[in-house]
Image 1 (cartoon, rainbow, N blue to C red):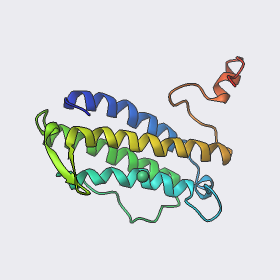
Image 2: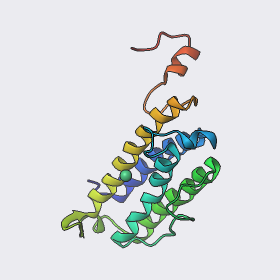
Image 3: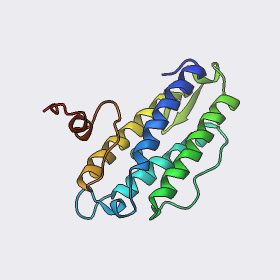
Image 4: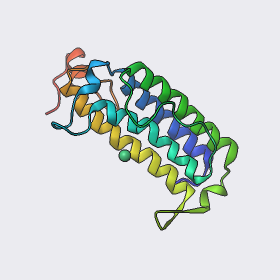
Length: 165
Ligand code: NI
């Protein structure tokens, strides 16, 4: 749970840069990569990640919803640019509309009282969860992955180091 807006802002800034770097590595063709036949595609997971940020509006924050509907766009560039917009707007809304006291206030979500500071933590964890799903599908789609929390296989090879098992 976050108790200071400043701490969330710092963490959100670095986490959203990581997410943007993953989304930037997508190609239009790769969006069709499925988890398994008939299930979610890479494009659908990426679009869910982008759209889900707007759930923060149900906690009282006012910022623009993502453009388009629930159906995933077929443009990787559009998904990445829409992410950049909404992740910036989310941070600005938190900084302008909430303060450290607001983070301790609770809102009922699915019959449970959630402190706003915990909801912000959940937002980051939910994003990391889907970003992790995406990197597996991106590898299966033959894409080059950016480093997220550590070097990828390709980075080790480029540095002429033995990849970890
Ligand atoms: Ni989700």
